[in-house]
Image 1 (cartoon, rainbow, N blue to C red):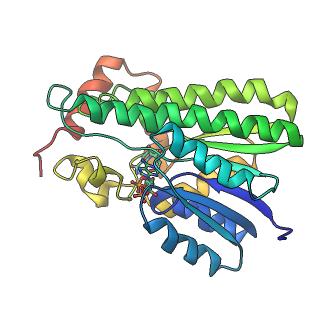
Image 2: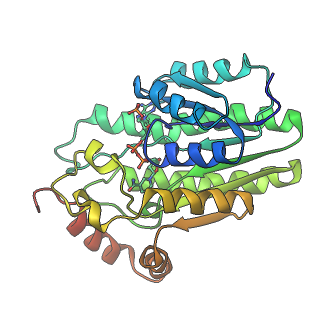
Image 3: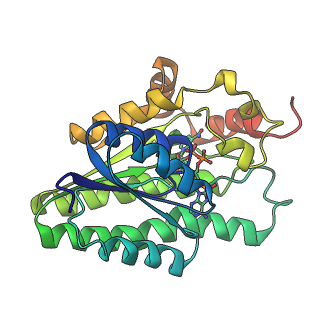
Length: 262
Ligand SMILES: NC(=O)c1ccc[n+]([C@@H]2O[C@H](COP(=O)([O-])OP(=O)(O)OC[C@H]3O[C@@H](n4cnc5c(N)ncnc54)[C@H](OP(=O)(O)O)[C@@H]3O)[C@@H](O)[C@H]2O)c1
């Protein structure tokens, strides 16, 4: 059996999750990784090519069974989980009036219900083993209203405060929890959210996913409570958001997230 440490990462077939997987592999971790499509198997091969073991699992993180099955797959490895990254998340562009309720409820199932479900399994496992690190991927969107992705921002605000609360509860149990708040980042995320024609459809205005992942990785290793990830402008935006009214932040986000601008 491998004597390397084990990390699990949800939503790791591409984007920020995959960049984090590469950083852990580079640091000699074995990586258990999930995604909802067959891409996860190709991404796992890339991780294995870095000289560690990868355990890919295909499941829908928006269903109870999908989350539970990934957890049982991990448990069956009979290994101690050193680190868990709760990364999987989606957004949904367009207006609340236009969007299908089912799509919005699916977003809540993935971003909120799935996160709580997996965190429960992980926290108990780590407590039994006496230590662990948990990274929860929230967003800069946690710090403002997000019109035209109206359900997304609040789901990420949940993730941020969930992480901070859990951190306080688990710190005396030798388990660290860190929240990661990336600004807009150059992954498939906005395309998948149907936002190609919004300001966010332009990759040139976004942060580099490698930089974002590196900052999250370092924050976890330094056991800080949360980190805003991205360039200096992104970090400044987070500071300004603390002093800006919700109404003004909502107006500004609406301009950026509205469709048919490009
Ligand atoms: N990109 C940004 O601008 C940005 C900014 C702030 C925060 N974030 C947060 O960062 C996290 C990662 O986003 P990203 O930008 O890397 O997005 P991404 O490029 O769209 O990647 C999402 C990952 O999640 C997987 N996934 C999607 N739906 C799934 C489901 N139902 N079940 C299981 N896996 C699923 C995808 O794999 P499959 O396609 O194979 O399912 C993929 O590996 C999210 O929580 C997001 O909210 C992103």
